[in-house]
Length: 290
Image (cartoon, rainbow, N blue to C red):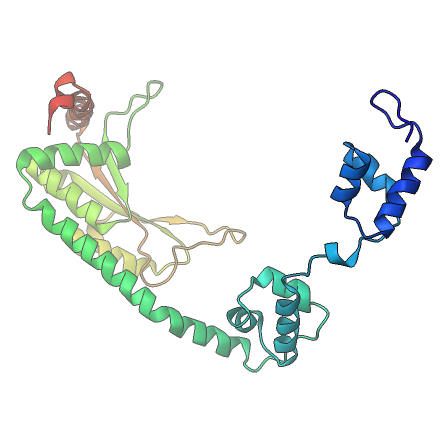
């Protein structure tokens, strides 16, 4: 064998030797060691076209699984059913049986969906019970609210949901809009605690035109203890036909708007309380509280 430094000059002679060894039944590793070839690419080129000896061929471990999967598919089983018996993945099954006809559907889509829902019902009931338990436990932990707690809570609520002035347009008036009846009741309780007379309040409804407007007006009037006739003109939002709205149905009551007359001083108190809450939350001694 004629070699130059680091390269194999006599490729044809080397190939002749490699082919002879391959035909004697040697593996690639044995040929590499016999001819002292350290270049795998060259080794494969030397034996190109020569089939490996039978003893070097490894059986495909999945051949039996493939045949079993095909047999079950021909019996009309689905991927889920096939997966249980051979114990292989759906992706493998789909490759193995994709040339076979699909099994005839034994149930309609509606029947299959109903079966799936029935299977989920116990899980959904358990999850709903867990939600209810967590909510009830958290609600019980609140207990009674002191005036100070209500003061801070109401100020934070207003600063999150109420109308606020801007630097370029200072409007110091209290106006609160919300669709959550709990928010509305809490806001009114906060105003009562601050001594704001109900005579200073005005109400009106904001709602989409597709809703039951009269029903919504009576709903909010009952909630705040006022007469519908005392409400201001309802703001009706025109519906964009291209928009798919989620807030529809009998539970949709729109929003209630509450304005407080002569509320500049009240607005300043709210703003100041909010800044006080933020300052207290980031005070140095806050880090040592437990």
